[in-house]
Length: 390
Image (cartoon, rainbow, N blue to C red; front, side):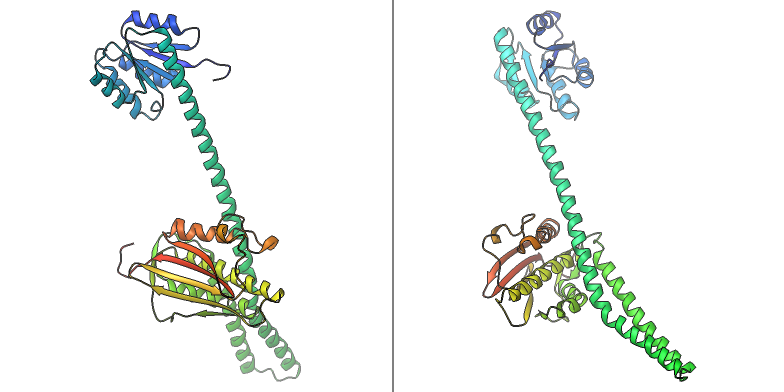
């Protein structure tokens, strides 16, 4: 404690030993005194000493009981306790250490020995508090970084949503525009009777309802799951592929889900969070295919192939593409924060968050590897039956 003295609480029912320790230590430390176990417990709460020198043989509450009570109280549990006692048997020393003491000095004691023991344990105590503070700061820093990554991931997902909605709306908006023009032309020609208008209102409202359902679907996609549930993994993949089909078609990419939709393969976890992982992986494959085309690596149609299989205790999902594969320089660190396969065009948070969801929240595993002509991501999730307890 730079600039201040360490606080030492001396607990002994004999005035002679309290005075002896006062003379020995008062120049180096701020001293407080207690003449009983009960007084020691009270003083430890209010004085907040950095170390306690504790006698064993005291009336009403001995040192062992006092030390035990200090250690079960969160406010005093970390304070190091050194027993100073006339008891010299090994059994007493063992009991002292079991009660939570860090050291044991026998009476009569040597002055240098007492000071040396105190200094040693104060240094250790200071180091412990310093390390705990560093750990707390590091945990807090990681937590802030994690929150920032989550927010960035949400914003990236929002951008994908907007792009997908634009593609989903493009055709119905064009059709709605043509309907409006046709109504105007028909009205100008004098052919717009009640039946004609009714049919066009029905068609127009149908298109508007379709667009409204699209918004509902994407809103549900973005809502986090509130609790673990048993869900159909195959259905989750088909839902994501359906929502983003127009976006993928615009890039001339075909998604092939090789497990029939009619076959249920169940897992326990967070359905919407898994769908966000699926979106991340599909988007990565789409970007890899588009990048490979620009570089002239591939000329054929982009293909994203999804296989879902079930064993006795797990569901295994593989997502493969023909986008040229992952750079060997990043493949070993692919799921670390800010590591991107897209160079300056990527944020490096999608795969990091995917691992956090699969491994941190769903008790699964996720890995990546290169295959001929492309890359493959493998996800393992715990299997579940519809009747299983959540």
